[in-house]
Length: 499
Image 1 (tube, rainbow, N blue to C red):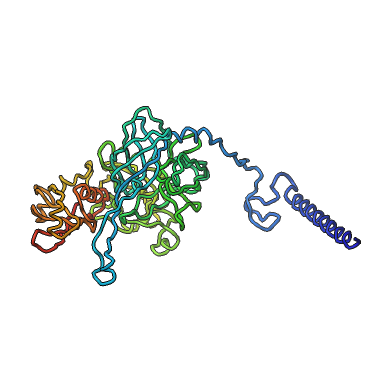
Image 2: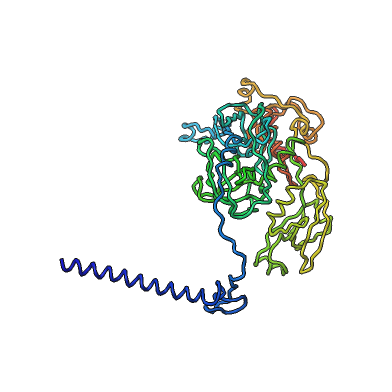
């Protein structure tokens, strides 16, 4: 018993001593900080201070207390009614194997198509039924079904899409539908509260909250290997499969972005999600609705971000910006007088620190617009007025690609007996050839197309989809590789340039 009390007293004594040391230390620190007035004892600007560090004084600075989190309930309640659930049905192409060939030789037996179902989200942006979503949500879909928050279901038609920004525009036959008003994504601040509204894992009308973690993030590569247009908003709001195409909303209930992707090693949320800024997305869908295709302006440059290594290598005089390393074959920037190793530091009065920010600013422009570009040329600031061009090198309106008009031919599906007689499981026949790319390349009526760019072709819709995707890519090289044959002839490859 005596041992118990001895141990107890030792513990209590230890606590008392610890408390005394803490109190003494607190008093010491307090005396160091509070000696004189306010926090001035920490060190005046440019002085050593009490601890030997040059430290700007807090005294005299405007107090800015940490703000409380806003009430997000009104924004969440208004947003869920305008965010829809999207179900897509399509077909997936898989390689078909014969088990006898696997064991006894022969290998692949061609391809077969299997039905697939996918899910995503969308945002109603017009009371008459226009819906914005991600291109990757509806890509290759044969059927698109939209379910509203009140469980009404509609068939949706694809108005158009843009793989470069991963944005698509759908239309349903509805009226007086709930919408989310557009905000201004340029005004978003780092640390600002936002909501991600969507349907992760088919859990409809889900709202998660977070803050804006960063802006102007690069986009990486799209599905076809092209670089996406950057400028993405990074948030820590939880986003998972099914959230794609959903709304990123600010605390006022305004649409500031379209959730599009996550950075993850597992395929699920790990703290990083990205959204297309609504200013960019709105411009894309507006062009699609008006012209059928995005009117994308280009500077016609190849560039990289300026960092310390790049600065030393090229002998630059600035620490940030977009270094011009080369020009496109037809370049608006080169025509205006910009040279290699110039560093773009501003466009129309807005400072830019990276090639991604240059992309983001130019993405809001149209071919034919004039922009003022500020560059640093080995320490000297220069201004250039650039007349922006489109991907075709002019200022005209780019119209929606029509495979039939572009290729100048009509395609017809093969009957089952025709496919059997040729020994093929898929393909289309060139029915008629008029003025266009097919005639120019020497393709004649009766030619049987097996694949376009290594994708099996079963009908004219699939052919049109591939051509439209190539047209929307922009750039200098848009080649269509066709593999096919004439009856009683050998398989041949034909390359058609779509520029």
